[in-house]
Image (cartoon, rainbow, N blue to C red; front, side, top):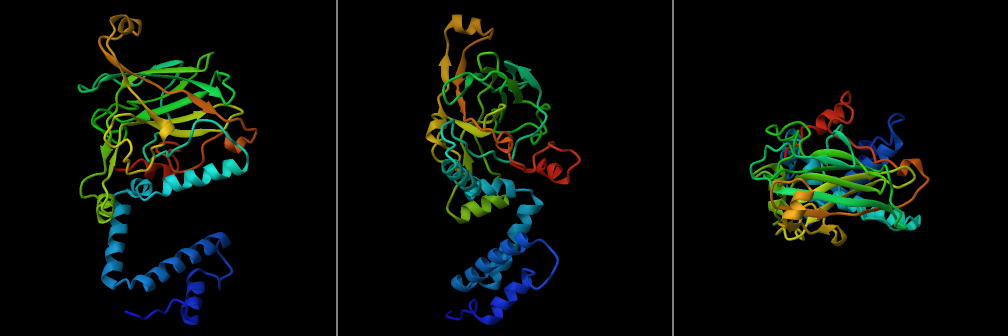
Length: 324
């Protein structure tokens, strides 16, 4: 079809009305953003000759995504989370905030309020029969290599089946979630289990979108981090375990070469005894560098709805309904 109406005065005036430009109330930035968003979508309908059937099918899919609280899962799958990181990297470069461990996406499955430990924590509850013991350790330093004592290292990851506590009701509260405050040498250590990767639920709205694009919804085994310390820029990152079949094919686009870390199998009896373990384990070492900043707003994580971060806040409660 050759009919195109987007550039007509009638449509342009209509867009201004829909965006509220002819109304005194409302938020001016919201109007500008909505006008741009609607303009792009209206033009897309024109350019691709989108049919009513296609449009209402998309509306139905959006309804399903919302009702199953999967927008937070689809967002990284469509590259939004990584794109925001790319923009923040560029903002840091322009401001000459260079160095430090690379950031990568947070994902939708953080839960606030994990138990706090000094230097060392056991993260797993010992109830996962398939869990392979992991010794996770590292040092937090500034960009000059000086250890940062008292840094807060928040860690969360999945169990051997790819499930996260709180969202997976079969797990105990805060299983595989801890906050570790680094010791005098900037070191943190956790005893845990090797996580599994996971895939988006088969047939779920996120899966429907990805399959329409000819893509899968699999994530490799990975471990999430928030790291913060006074006078340093807050870091949101995660490591992917080397050797996973999806390490370099992550549907969420979270893999960065500097964040691919091996899990070294340790079977030496002396090393096993030194860590007071019962048998062989895998050691994962992840050292972290934080960039310096005097700006208070850069020393804390950005605001977004997170489960249990503010239990009186409706958005935080809704963040706790994410399905993976």
